[in-house]
Length: 116
Image (cartoon, helix red, strand yellow):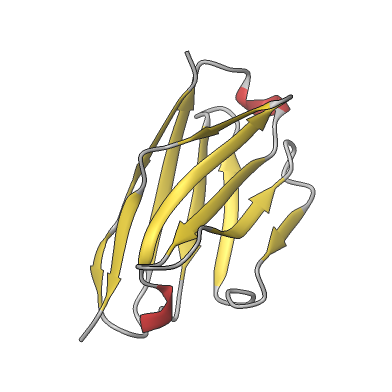
């Protein structure tokens, strides 16, 4: 079955960096767009970034442009989110996402805390 497993979350100081990973299995990873979403405390889940199957196209939320980079390794079936210049507003649970035809799959999430 489809599995998405995030890792790399934790506590970071403002201005710091983290790299999230999402290991995928149960589908042909290289054929599908992958996305990262986040859900801050008390708020709705929002799209952070997405990357096309061949990495030829990426999209970012305005709030993270220039600070976050999404990339993927189709040999390792893994998508990454490099997060730089982290701000307190970036604190959230981050989720990996894939939509396979009509079905949407989510990972279990990884928590990012930004605090000094």
